[in-house]
Amino acid sequence: TLNSTGALNLGTSTVGGNLTAHSGNGNVTQTGALSVGGTTGIAAGTGNIDLTNASNTLTGAVSFNGNNVVITDAGPLTLGTGEATGDLTLNSTGALNLGTSTVGGNLTAHSGNGNVTQTGALSVGGTTGIAAGTGNIDLTNRSNTLSGAVSLNGNNVAVTAAGALTFANVYAMGTLTAVSNGSILQIDGSAISVAGTSIFNSATGIVKLLTSGNALRGGSNLPSTNNVLLPTPMRIALPSPARDPAQLQYVTAAASPFATSASEAIPGNSAQAVSTAGNAAGNVGDASGVGVLVEVVRQPAEGQSGTVSVSVPKDMAAANSSFSFPLPAQIANVELSGGAIIVTQVNNQPLPSWLKFDPRTNVFTAVMIPEGALPLQLLARVGTSVITIEITERLQ
Image (tube, rainbow, N blue to C red; front, top):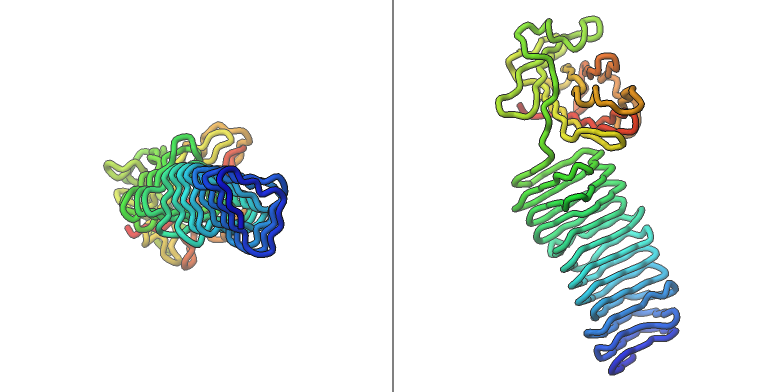
């Protein structure tokens, strides 16, 4: 137990039990490694806490209060109850538990590929930046208050906020789950990149992700959300509507057991509708009705990803049904290096046996769809760009 009225330097110390230190508003520092076998409690008041020795070993929970606080641990780091009126910086080599922490300024945390978790609420007045590398980030306490922009880097990432949640750059090698009691927003110039499924759940606000640099490769799910604002789909170029389906076939009779036709766009809708065969008997969709809807959600560019949304009516997506749709002209005709379009599933496996892609006509043809085949995500590679194609079923 240490008590000072002013600056407190812990020197090089080894404690088998618990460490308790009070500096009377003075700064707390060290000159060598600090090893504590039990818990660590440091009260600096208005002073700073600077424990940055890379050889520190803080075995038990670390509680603190101070202005600007920096804590480094050579291994895993577990916080108890902490309060930093200024910034809080944490560095661990292994699991990082944020405990119950209140930060008046910015929070910066690096776990060295360890999982980042919490035992109580996290309150941050400034920005939040957490880098877990290959570790998971699980900050799902419903009382979290993250006032500034949130940057996250990890494998599976989950974050919950009691109020609004604003993202800066986010990179998830696995999945991303964002839950907020307010709106879920994104700052200009940032990017959200997720290899797996993305879930954005706003209980009372809106989800507004308009940044063009986003790459939600595994598709996105938006449950329990009042209002979703995503990039405005662009009209795709299809043949002029006509009543004679024979004039509008995308595939020939020799290439497919059914014919397809293009329908008129829904009035006021930014998407174009493609009416297709509805069942194995070869019925041709009514050219005046609404069939498969194809939307360019994000236009690709050299070295940048794009997204195409394809929604199929429930009757056309039923087992043993068939349909087809063209790759949008903005995708098929975009001038990118490489030329040839290569289409695979998101796991880089070939297309399922019931789905074919004709690179000559840039048309997808689905024949005798099996039960539960949709939703399906595909990747179309053109030069250095990757286009995510999300095929889903809609109720009507």
